Image (tube, rainbow, N blue to C red; front, side, top):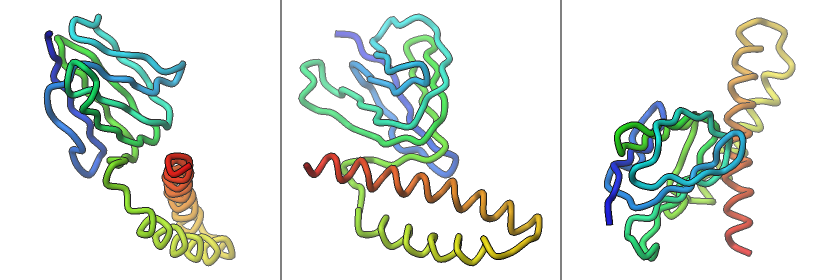
Amino acid sequence: MATLRCTVAIPTRELFSGEIHYASVPGAEGGYGVLPGHEMLVSADKQGVLTLWLDEAGNDRRRFLLYEGAAQVYRDTLTVLGRFGTDLDTLDVEEVKEKAEALRQQIEDLEGQDTEQARVALENCQNHMAWYDLQLKVASEAAQ
C-alpha cells in the first residue's frame, strides 16, 4: 500500500518525520483522516491527539498531544504544526506536574503586578498553564 510523508513539529523542534499509512488529525471543525492520495488541504487544528499509523495493519502507532495549530496536505505530504506538542508515549507526568506547580507560583506573583510587561507575561504563563493542564488531563484519562 502507498504511504505518505509526514512531519509533526512545534516552534522549538520536530516531533516526528517519516512515512505513514494513515493519520487521524484533531481538526478545528472536527477530526479527520488522511490517507495517501488525499486532496490538498489546509486546516486549523484544535487541541487533541494526533494519531499516526506507521504500518498498514495499524499495529504500529505514534500518538502526539497537540495544543492548537494547523495542518497541510500537499502532494502526499502531511505537515502538522502545533503551538505546543509532545509525544504521548514519552510523556513524563511527574515532570509536567513539577512545571505546572512552578508556573502556578509564577502566575500568582504576576497577578499582583499592574504593568504592561506583567500583563503580557501573565498571559503567556496562562497559555502554558493550559498546555500543562491538558497534558495532565490526557495522561489521567489514558491511565484509566
